[in-house]
Image (tube, rainbow, N blue to C red; front, side, top):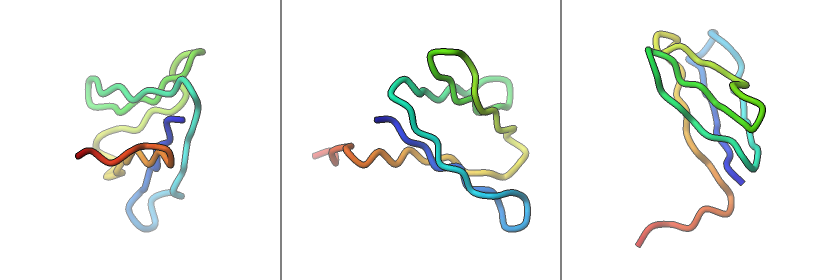
Length: 63
């Protein structure tokens, strides 16, 4: 299941983990947008300083 961890710089927001079977990450016009089957669900502006990492538990390491 796709899972993403959004981490904000200290004091600028709480870290957030999002997961859904149909979750995708799109980057456009200075925004990182997490989208599910219903449309956009979270949008993070590039200037926020947040980092987004995919952290799927079932993801196999590349060889």
